[in-house]
Image 1: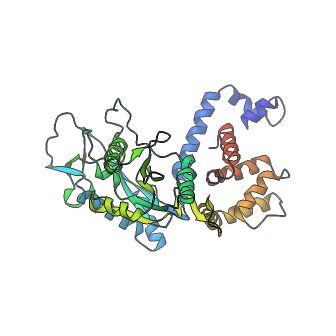
Image 2: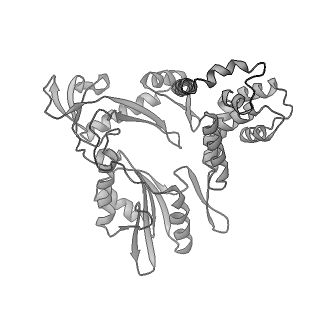
Image 3: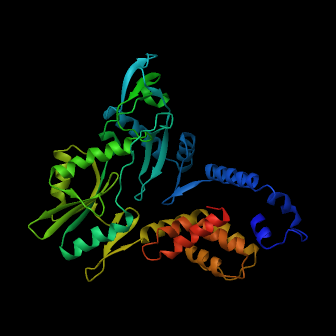
Length: 390
């Protein structure tokens, strides 16, 4: 409102003079807006694939009681047992002296929901107190824009099969070189109160992504694959002169395009001892659907993600939007949730504030449609930044 009044030169008119003092203190206003957005982000409910995701352990217990199940509680117990199995921590005992050079950090659980409804919990370290490494610490990922290239074209031209797989507890397969320790909390069972040295590449530690990337890179290289010059996270191997097989890596997600992907997945399990999950023909990968037309044409879409967002929208926001539309006298609301938002954005009989807020409310959903409409997420993100509502 302050920006609109300033640009339209309305500050001298009745009803707008209250914004004069805000124009004289733009930094104070910007700081207050950022604090308000942060407070809203931290307190507003978070939904993913139609499920509410807890922001902390207390929220997880509350949601389990509300939903009449123990999904988040079970996910937390499973994760702690996996850390024990992978020897993520080395115990020095209770109140033991800490070796020189080690820094104390804290850990907490972060919850998530997969596209198949599986509830997940991750133990994440607050690695910011440790020294920042001089070299790059990030794990490279395949570019999303290249997905149709390495999935559609080989499957169509060379009649290769495509399989998706997820490496379970990927970071815990690698060891960390950073010197950090924690004190075991109530969830650590027998290790509660123990001084625990972080031995494996725990989520949140600076170089964990890099160590996992280096750990897995040795695997395809060992069986004859080489990184592509166009994208180093696409591994290639030539066979029989005219056939190229591919492995695309996105942290712990694998897209395998080969004559017989099962031979490769069995090799990962039997020889390299990876724990593979979700090994199946690619139908949904990294937020996109991969399907074939009746004539065999391979295509990419975001239909599954959009359908789940519509379900979530109808479940949690439908009544709110209907009340907003009725309050401003809009007489022709469409039935479909996303269509309602699109019409609200384009209907100039509605106030611009409502049309824009409706767009912003769903602009993250629209970003997943960019395989067909690149201009839509670009416009919504630009509007979000200029109005300060992103």
